[in-house]
Length: 566
Figure 1 (cartoon, one colour):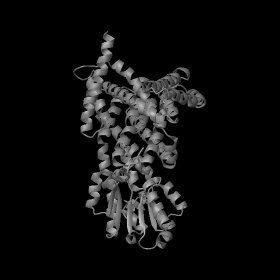
Figure 2: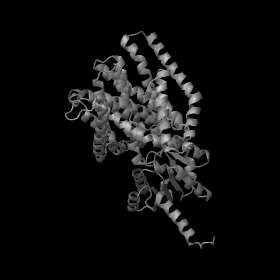
Figure 3: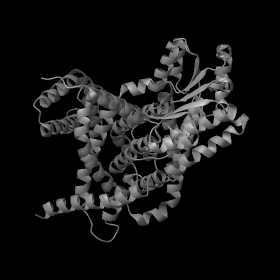
Figure 4: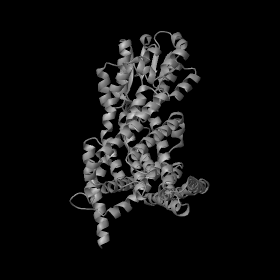
């Protein structure tokens, strides 16, 4: 009974305190994970009051790790990686190497062995997917080329950490015994061979058996049975990977998620697994917090400061500079650089593995947790700096030209100057050539009306040029960019950008050059419509409202028709 009471008490206390502290964190517009970690600290043995069973919480958290990695695999899409591979793949790999190297050198300066230093470095090299997505979604960035690039970057980071989780256990015995490099190489080769065997089995049988099984379950129409089937796949493959192939639970869960994610049932599986995944993820974060002694933070403050410096330099600054080097616009580089200036869930998993294997001293976990808390809490401040830093760079042409040396201003001037100049006065300028902009462009083209496209995605610009459309690659919100679209002699500006603040900057830039231009702008909320109306644009179009008007007009037309007798 005591064990049962401890289990119930641990679960109850974890969920109650996680809810309370998570609510407070959300109230202050912080990620809820901050509240979960603090709840764990409150339940730990180093603070007064009720102390939860750390052993039970740790075992329950293993389910959280498995479901977290299952979720990573479930949402992993090769298509997302393929779309942004030219930037995300080299950029993320270089950034990981830089951050991991800086973190390892820092740990070596503390006197740690190389094995633990490398694990510590990798734990500082991966941003929290949850924090990045929740930071970009409210800004309307996820449906933009920048959002797709961020997703691709996160995919590469997650894959790299999966590889780290596979190799660290294999290297731990060699690190402890001081084996020679040939023995270490043999250990790595054997581990990779087992991983390849597991991947081969899943490719041959898993991609057929698992979707077929879930399809058969789905046809039964039982929601509970389907949810149980998803859970069985996640836990069963993770356990089988560990027992049969000797690879980690994390890799098995990731592959299970990937297999399910590639099937037609991926969305239903995600919907069923998400509540359970979220619940056990809360236990995971609470269990991490329970292992931390708050009193140790005082003595570890210099080390936490060093780790934060690595995160800001190796993650945030490095990501921004790499995007400049890879030809991304100024706003893109600064925004995504700010988004990656933190660490989170995979960092806890990596450092926890290092501590459990004896590679990393226990204080390493405290340092990572402290750095994670500060970086996540301070992440909104990094976003607040994006605007001032952008204006600072734009006001210094030499600095701007050095950083954005691959920018499309030069590309535009060289490649498209004559085509743009040949357009008649009174053309339209379409900013953003996604689904909305493309539809507007096709209608104008069908009517024989001239227009120029300004777009931030290279592939979209290339496709538009192949179709005979005058398209400029660059960020219309950047100072001077609209001049290359001859905005001064344009009649109409169509702004389809999903970010309202960016749209406002584009409007201000256009009005500064051509005060008489007519502007139609895409809005995402009634507040956006009010803001654009105050700017006296020609029209602010709210998608949901226009959709409602279209449905309403058709509904009224149908209702006015005389009923035909049955």
